[in-house]
Length: 221
Image (cartoon, rainbow, N blue to C red):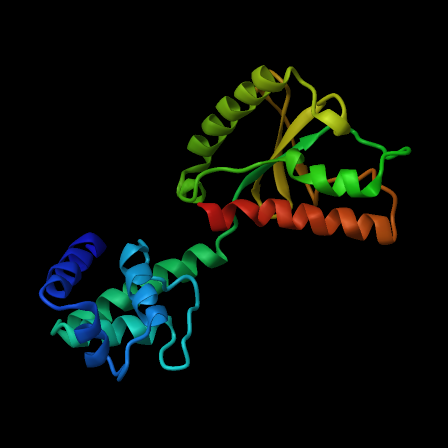
């Protein structure tokens, strides 16, 4: 559906120069920044709607609508396509993204705080962008494979964090299945990730790094 919409848009754009299209959109004197934005929108699978762009004339959705009008696409069709796409993006934004937290029973001794913060991402394994849509059965199967591959690659050790004890697969917020190093489910746990790091300012630093690590993959996916 979106691919056909994009194909139609690209074909229509090919009949005009970039500057002609931009002028039809209301850019009296198109700049290099305007051209770059046009190219970026065409190259992006979601037409840039997930990035919240703004150039003092159009926000992302308005830019796409103006672009479609400039090349003569049916406004009703355009509005329907954009509405479906923005609804999907909003659903993805709100959805909980399952992940794996690696438990080593870590207790901080004399490890430098900056080193722990820099290595915090090592304690998380992320999945593909559509993984959250899988059934729980399929998620558990892929989690098992991911854990076994991780153990084979790292030999059950996690650098500064120590020897791996188990894996926590958070399939929803504050609810996790526990896996052993053979990739077998050994229990279920409710609540946030346990932390053996000391409280106070140091815990806040590590927690901030952990939050960044959990969301790091979203922009890359």
